[in-house]
Image 1 (tube, helix red, strand yellow):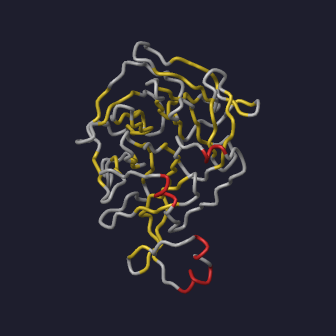
Image 2 (image 1 turned 135 degrees about the vertical axis):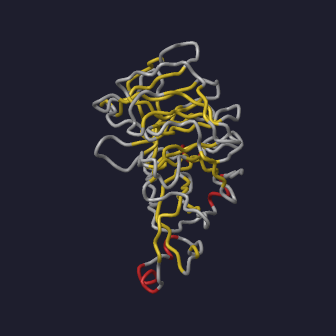
Image 3 (image 1 turned 30 degrees about the vertical axis):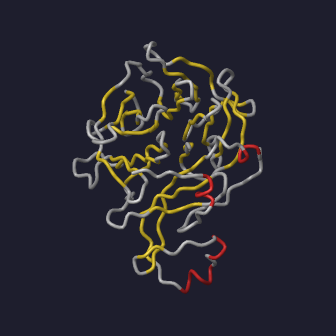
Length: 310
């Protein structure tokens, strides 16, 4: 089940399929020079196939317009796309027997376990009992391994996955429209069964997303207000409510659009991922836990990120 992704190995991966990989290396080159940071992004994309086979890997410059017109193509929404922030390279993962992501599904969570295994949560958008596929977690290995998640109610969604320092997989569970009530759960890595693990009571007037754990074991998440204002909070099992640390802000302005991801480096530095409302692309930001000030480090055009360990 392990999908251990070393920095060198990801540097050898190339783009396949219709994925944007034009990363902008315009700020803070030190980000790519830090050995403790190996940031991987994920998104979903159509896979370009020929005779039901994935197009062989090659440099993105080789996929020019002349070549693409001369090859019959069958585009289907089958792939999960992994991209490396450090190298700008990407890889499309395909499960030939069962589509990894179908058109009516979303990637609701993405994380790396302590052994380097990448895990994604896939959630159907419909709340009908006639859903084609249930909520599941997929381990991105060779072959891909999938577990059906049990313990969710019909209107609930699993998201904000986090591989903890001690090897567990935890997540946030809330309504499928992203609204409270929210609870923190543990996911059994063998069965996919969820169980509540915390008595922290989240606010009912704010959305909760993005779990992160620092090396000291402290858990962090973000609260999203009605107007998009985003507050960094710490989760303490000894406290009944989240500990509010600071409202996030960038360039002197309140951050107004929630976050796509929140991760913590081996040095204890919190990194936020997202974009201000009506702006693109997403970018990686360092976060000051005390003030909430965010410093833009690097653009990264993907959906969610995680830090790969090892």
